[in-house]
Image (tube, rainbow, N blue to C red; front, side, top):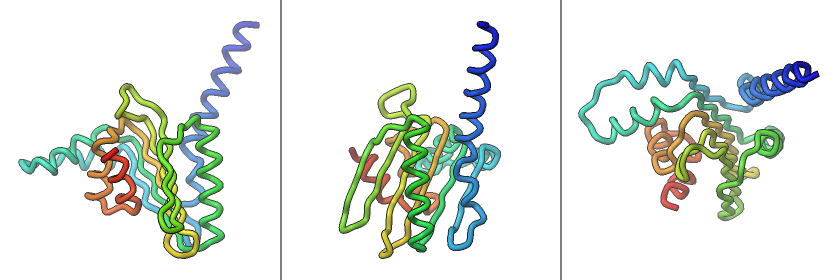
Length: 172
């Protein structure tokens, strides 16, 4: 009986891990959604660059700790609603905590995180920026060891949408 419970627990845990890794994959090839997907292998390749520039070195140190980055962008209201629903559902099922909510001139931004080893470190960051017909909507998921004080460096260097909102988070 105990062995049965352990096996069931292991299967549930593995299925949740698999689900978490692929929940946004269905948006990669959809019409009206632009996708940026960077995995651990690419981050490893990027981190092999040598630089004497302090800012570049800080960026390299940051990406060494990342596992996955997914960004989905759309101006289509229907697709935006689907991304918003997906972000809301995922934040609940993955056990993410709301870190910040911003409503600025009708543009709503929500940032969720999964706690890490320290107060400024998280294992996962999920950002949803709702353009609501006026601007582009953005869903961004980052996993790895993420220092909240450095996250805006990543978005600046990679020129990712949502970077300004993450700068506000870094300042807080």
